[in-house]
Length: 398
Image: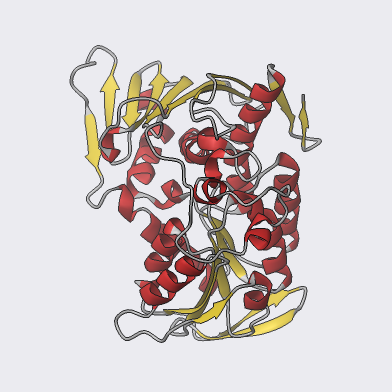
């Protein structure tokens, strides 16, 4: 048991963390939309965490976050409209960054400069160049950084890792096939907001655009702010594949897509990605958000085609099918608490690493590998050709 004082080293000085393990982690939340409040709640379920500050440029989000953080007799957090003001607070030890993707890079660098430990939602960044800079920043820092790739802490994928690690059962895997199905075509375009938004500050490093409520509400599907649905969901899928295959980033990616059928979006809803890896396998990921809607536990599947068996793993269960027994699995496993719970152990891993200063389960280097795969897919769509990654030079070759 640790009872010494931990000091968080940073470029701006040394900050006393307090007596461990009983000391309180004072968390600042930057970006309090739906996902931000969901992850904030996972932090708040730990009695050692205090939600000390919340920051958003959209007033309704800020108000909802304050209300959520103040339940069960908890002290009301300080509110901020500028994330830099939150980072300047010496009372905040760590930050959760749950903003739109186009802000992640700048906010991570600023949080490192302020000496904060960081939990950042996926995708890690908006471009490969940003990712390379963040990997270098992580290597030069003593801070703990956890990417929100919760499959790395999820009991289902940890159980699957034991199976893929046992080559005697699965054999050699030379192809992984994955799909994700949903439908957003029937949703109405957002035409108004229910409260005040600082539009200029929200746009931040993105190109200047006239105010548009739909760009704010559906930012994931506009290339100014994100990589579209293939990046938003594909980052999770490719991270799970990398985890189970024990591989790094792809060496090349080729993608094909249909046209966007939501006229306001400039990213497609139906995309197929083929990624080739130096570990001698292909990963083929197909996403279609113009399909029928499935129950969440059935909307995503990954199939690992070994030469001895096939492993099927979805959101909440897995099955191993040996050769000659395609209808009857030899091994099955169902997560007792399901995918919705996966964020909780991932947050716990981050909190434990804050205390021990050990590397978390999803550091930036791993988060970038998954993000790079989907960024290469988008570059392939843009240039209509295979995109290569030069790992030694750390750069894209178009």
